[in-house]
Length: 91
Image (cartoon, rainbow, N blue to C red; front, top):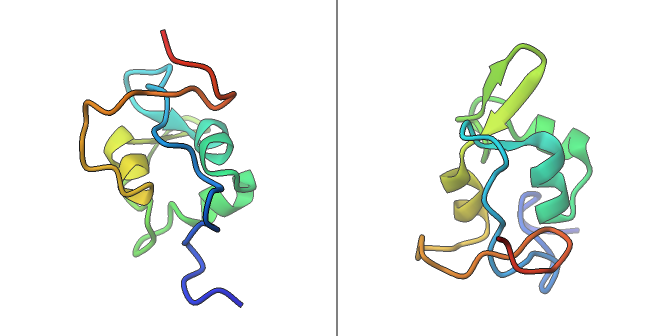
């Protein structure tokens, strides 16, 4: 059993996420692909007190700020090379 249910197994996450397609942030599906988690896990993490609690819902879509995803990946440098969820470089 993992000590921290929000931690990722070593080597599972990417070096840096690609920029979100929307200026509002990443969607749940994008974050799930970046972190290698099920979308239901990402939805659960948007509740108050959870790692992605600053997500905003507009209509039926949740938008998760880029800084929240980078914090989960422990990326401090906002200029780090961005990689898409499929592994190629972002445009």
